Length: 284
Image (cartoon, rainbow, N blue to C red; front, side, top):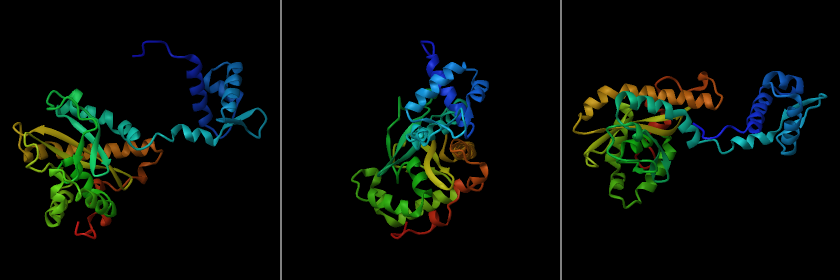
């Protein structure tokens, strides 16, 4: 809840911009009918927005339209901010139901980095926070889920980077045969788990998140190993994770203004496409 009342002039300006965005051109009469803002105020706001380059007079007398400058208002709204908006509420709801903490991770050079976590909502988390935590692409479930399903060329580049890492969790990247087998298993199951030798007190199940046909992130659920086995966790939560990922994909499409027909075919998020599943140049 805000601790102060909203600034009416700002609210009116934003409502006016939204109304202008509804039509190619708008008259003052039309804007008044849509916003109920006094006409004298509409004129002052339009003049202000025009001075800022966001609005211009249309060829029709007394009509106004937005300029291309408004695109700059959303130029920073992409990637992680949009991903969080598309996923946060859905992850929160699932954690409230299953109690286990969940997280979204995005690629970050030679790792994936957690950009959203439901730890504050979970009574079963072993961490106080995980935002910004970097996780291995080859040992951690969130990293494996991204690596297994991303484009083959991207995967080649990521593996070549990870091979140069001295982090003990990244050493499996140097064993081409074992890495090939692990990624193949992840793609076959449609789900990644953590390397059993890494942080054995807990485990994570993770699946990829797609935007259209491109993998953009991974989402995972972490559970305490003594509470249930990996197989039990998969049986209980795999389907929910798949549905969650599909819901995030749909929400991303909605935020981008795309129709559901433009989404990847059902189930594609957990089945490797021809590029993702073909062997890469160094056997991955």
